[in-house]
Length: 82
Image (cartoon, rainbow, N blue to C red):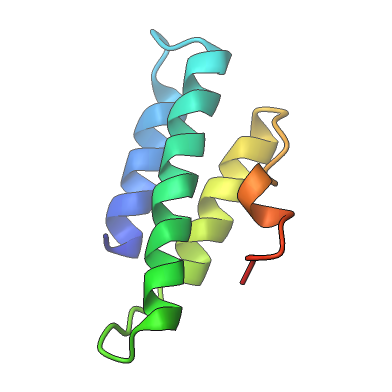
């Protein structure tokens, strides 16, 4: 997933007037989970090198904060965090 496509998806979600705030948070959390999984894969494989993953994760976290949601999920507080 490229950083530009992540930002585009975030903007699309945030600007969609048909979605409730709760639904926007739900969609952003799914993106967050997906990007975290990519990030974990990258740390476990020398074959994958995507320097944008960290900034993509920050973009999603910033969007969650803008909606009043806590950007820290359960995967960020356990022993297996990056």
